[in-house]
Image (tube, rainbow, N blue to C red):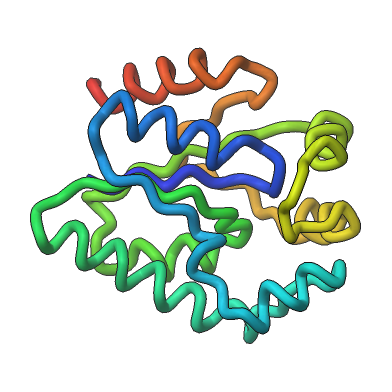
Length: 162
């Protein structure tokens, strides 16, 4: 099984993913680590990525998911996956083995969180673009980000055990 935790920047994907990883003993991956240096440089300047910019990134993530599942392992990925087309691309080969968790939050809360971040390449200016591009999933467990990380993980664990 592979659990993909999605949402806009600042929604808590990495925090929740790492905590879930500790509780399940599954490997955690952060999609930010799979961006090309060019993409990171672009985002560091406050410039949003285009779909074309994201293609190599999505390819790497899809390979990671497929390799992990094909090796009989489980994993957790923190990934924005804002558009339905991205989610479909990532799951097309492994649909039955992937669990989507959408961390939903309003702009004010997320913006406050991003302003508090230290040493992250993501700039607040891109948040508007992320909310504009967000196509909320219908195929995911949807959890409010105002809950504590522990409460969010408890909700995910209960969902996975059903």
